[in-house]
Image (cartoon, rainbow over all chains, first blue to last red; front, side, top):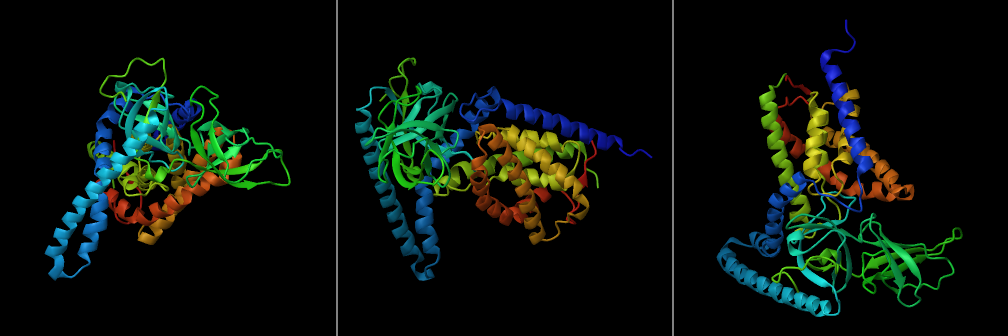
Length: 283
Length: 178
């Protein structure tokens, strides 16, 4: 009697091959810079318009949740009337959303005048589907002048940098991600440190010596070191400082300036050496 | 029970379509309604179904293809999940005789157990990659809320996948004849 039959042998061989392939893949993987394959580019270009459409329908979804679901629970006699009210409320919500969007864009555009780089305005259309990575997808790509490592900001501060790019979409590694490290200075004391993403939409400030006079409420700005981010962009605010009895550095918690929960539009800063952006996309 | 290769291809194509749809829900629809903090990683659930319920030499390759599709929506890439998937599949093979997903509760319990193995594998590899084991607890902890939610919805998704793959309802694994 054979201890291992043919089927078992095939299973073992397949498992070993796939495991070896994945180990090779893991060894080659870089979590701070992505190079999309042709397959990735093609499928992203096909799938992302669906994401874009869904992101656009956010207002309708919110209205559906806030209005329609509530209406269902009311008495039958009022259904017709309530639906009319709901439609009016929908219109109002849409108009209110448009008003807010206009305000946001206006602020973003006014703010962008202060920055010398060429800028591309983009909309957030998706988030990374894995828990441990904090990446957002934008509806603009290399066709709009965006290239890998371009910094991404809002009028509130730093969002991250472009991690990978396809023709019409780009993925941004946000400062919430543990693989993104931002060189910062404390605005008040000019103390240098590195901001890293941790968990729960917060960051940590590392490599600040125990004797530095950093306080809760101190604002952090980019140091301009490292060649990715321009100097002076708001990053976050110190919210907690732990002075342990051991170690040389402080344990500092930072809340980002950007409210990632409400992130909808961003500005991508195009590095100066990039080929000119087409007129319709340029701000 | 055996399954023909052509049937396997059809079932797998439908599963890929299902994964694409669920990935769009996780990456766009849920964040659009404010669900941004904990992701429902449906790729893990689909791979767990294949690892636990299928008994075929093609399963590791199916895991690889599913992870390649998942990598479109995540910078995690294909390799990390493929490796974790193979580890989970090997663990499931050892426990095959005692795994009977006959009730919803047993399905949730089994899915939670294998998710722990999955995330343990992934967390160790991430910590090795970033050379920082101080983050082990934080990364592992970030998986827990999402994994519990996934376990709770696993009976529904397993029922859908069971229909797609036409696996027997007694909970045992099914062979595939190629």
